[in-house]
Length: 241
Length: 388
Image (cartoon, rainbow over all chains, first blue to last red; front, side, top):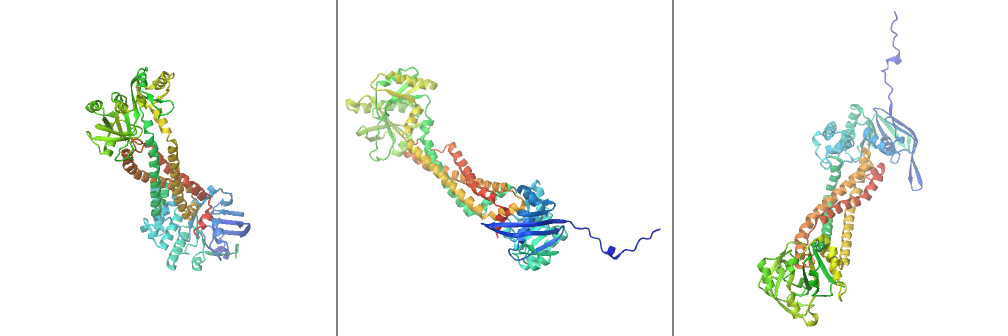
C-alpha cells in the first residue's frame, strides 16, 4: 500500500487561486490637443488591477491620475492601446454602450460629492436606478438599503444642504453602490473632508472592499488615505513608478 | 421620483429667478392677449354679422350718397323681405366733443324690422316712431352720457352743421354681439326735412333683410343690376362682406397690431431662453455627473426641454390668470363703454387663450433647443471638468 507522500515546503504554503485582472490596460496612449499643441498625458501605459483589489493611485498634479481613472471608468476613450474592464473592450464600445457599461459596472465617488441639491438623500441614491426598469417601490427599497450600508438610514429625507460634508460623501457612496457595480472609482473622495470624516469614509471604502468584495481604484493626494488601500501605485508624467 | 419630476423640480432651484421669469412672461402674455383681443374684437362685426342681411352702398365709396327712391326698388327685388336705410350723422356731444359715438339718421318704421337684434319694448318703439325728434340710444351710451328716458339732448352736427335737439324716448339693448350698444338712432325725416333742397332725399346706405341667406350673392347681384342703367350705381354685398370691407380701411392698423404681438412673442422667447440658458450653464457639472452615472445625451435634452416646457406652461397659466381680469374686466369694460362703436364686444375669445398658452409652451421649447443641443454635445469629462 502506498503511503501518502510527506508534503514539501512548497505545498505547505496556503494555495491561492490566480486572481483575474478586472482592469487591464495595454500600451495605452492618451493625447489631448490644446490648439495645435498635442499633450501626451499617457504614453504606452500598461496597468492591471486584480478583481477585489483596493488600489490607490498617487502622483503629482498633471501626472495623469485622473485621466487614467477616466479611462478605467469609461468616461473617456484612449488615443491608442486597449482598455479592458470587466471583460469589455471599452475602445470598441459606442457612446450608448459605454453609458450602459458605466451604469452597470462602475460606481463613481467624486471629490465634491456632486449630489443634486433638489433631491433628498434617498432620491439622490435612487437616481442611477431611474435608468433601470425597476418599479418605483423597488428602487426606493434599494436606495434605503444602500443608505443603511453607509449608516445614513436616519437621513433618507434630508436634502444635501441639511447634511455635513462627510454625510454628503456617504450619500454619494450609497449612490455609487446602489447599482451593485463591480468597480468603484473614487477621485479624491476625502479631498474636501476633515480628518475625522475622511477616516470614516475610508473605513467605509475598506468595508465595501472587504465585505462587499468591490474592486476600488482611488485617486488621492492624501498619504493617510492611500495607506488604507491594499496597494499604492505612483504615477508620474504618465508612467507608473 | 421620475425623470420628468426631476426635470420639473429644477425650476424650484432658483425660486427668485423662476418667479421673475414667470412674472416677465406673464406681462408679455397679458400684452399678447390684449393685442389679439383688439384684433378679434375689431372683427366681431364681421364674425357675428347677420347672414340674412345685405348692404347696398354707392359703388364708388361709402361716403357717397344714394337716392332715397332706391330703397323702394330694393324692396321690390325678389327675395328681399324688408329694407331700411341710414345716414351717418356724425354728431358730437357739445359738453364732451371727444366722446365719440355713432349717431345715425334712420327710418323708424323699418329700421327695427331689419335690425331685430335691437331690443326695445313695443311701447318704446311706438313712442319713438311717433316723436319726430325722438331718439333711441344704446344702454352703453346712456351710461356714458348719464342720460335717461325723457331727457332732452343737443348734438352738434359735423356733416350736417348746427345744433340738433332730440328727445330720448328709449334705451335699447342688443341680442347680438356685433350690435353696437352705444348708437344714437334718430328720425331720418327730422334730418331730411332740415336740409336744403339740394341735399335732401339721399341716404348713406340701404340694408335689406332677405328670405334665404344662401341666395345672398344672387340677390345682391340682382339689386345692383337694377341700378346699372342709373346715374348712380350701387355695390351690394352681405353684411359680413360689407363689414369686412369697412374693416379693410383699417388693415394697416391691424397689421401693425399683428406685428407688435409677434414682437411680444419674441420678447417672451428671449426671456424664457435667457432663464433656461442660465440654468443649463449653472448645471453643466451636474449633467456631467448624470452622464457618468449612465444617462444619455437624449436624457439631458429631455431634462432641459421638460423644464422649459414646464416654465412656459406655468408662465402661460399665470399670464392668462393676470390677463383675464385685466383685459376682460378693466380694459374691455372701458373700451365697450367709451369706444363701443369700434369695440361693441371686447372679450378674450377661446382661440386667443389657446394661442397664448400654446405660444408660451412652444416658445419654451424653441428657447431650450440651443442650450439642450449644447448640453447634449458636451463630453462627460468636459462637463465634469467644469466643476473642478
